[in-house]
Image 1 (spheres, rainbow, N blue to C red):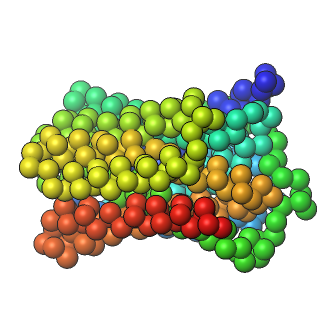
Image 2 (spheres, rainbow, N blue to C red):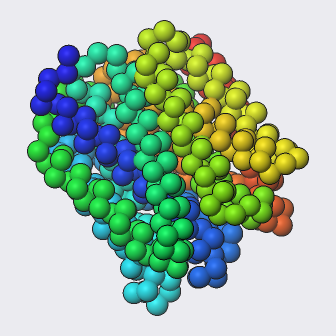
Image 3 (cartoon, rainbow, N blue to C red):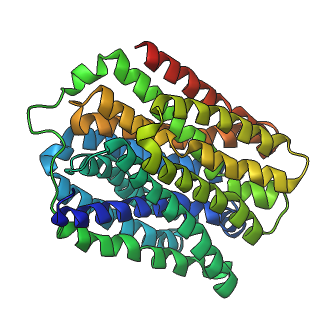
Length: 390
């Protein structure tokens, strides 16, 4: 049984992943608004996603070396401060800077630092809690990213209906309330360390292990498979399928997030009965099918179904790879989780960027970019086969 005092830690960690979902998924809902208001190209829009995850990658690198030195609690509190300030800045900075695009990048820099720290720290914080069934618990933890993503889409859509897209700056400030309040919850929560100082594997040792690089590849492909669809689904629905913003957001990114969350909750409940590697491999196959359906479906509604099914398929990938790492390399410590978070962020930034670049190369045809993203679940399936051999 989990000691009563640690429930506060667990709940704060859940909200931490909701904050991560806000950081990663609010801006994509505003892509069309940014494009019209600031006269941005598709490549510039795609770079906002890449830049977000690039900053998170750099944060992961620094945190991999210093997070244990700084301490988990000060670091996770700082993460939420950065997230709150950056979200407010997303609405404020474009008007403060001479160049609105530079203002967007400045705000993204700040909240991406927070997002990177959250990604590095929350998983080991929960992994260190005194509870059984770690794989299932990890999957359930990561489901809160999905519920956060769902809330971002639903509540933002409701805001746009009631207040209009012209008031999007107010929306970014309202979402900043979530990380602001979680600062105080983490400040009062007890936090254990994953591996005692001096007992974790040195980073040099980790980097010399074939097993680590297989896990690294799996995390890259997990992040890319997820975000290549997630980050572009709202834009795809509005511009490529010619449906309304409300319908596109509800049937695209919203249903994507719901099904991704249900997949994680399902494994959180049934995880002890299902071989994790097999579940990830099957999910990779379903992911390939979902991309093909989104690209080649003759009807817009079927394309949106493909976007949504992709959420179901990618649900287990990210938390599943974390669980495989903890199982195969229990002495990896914070450095391993940080480097795997870095790998995931490389995929999260690279996947949408590939979609944008390929789309621009085909005259702005987003379906061409989404078709190219099929490479990521294919590589994921291959990586699981290599992990079995290792």
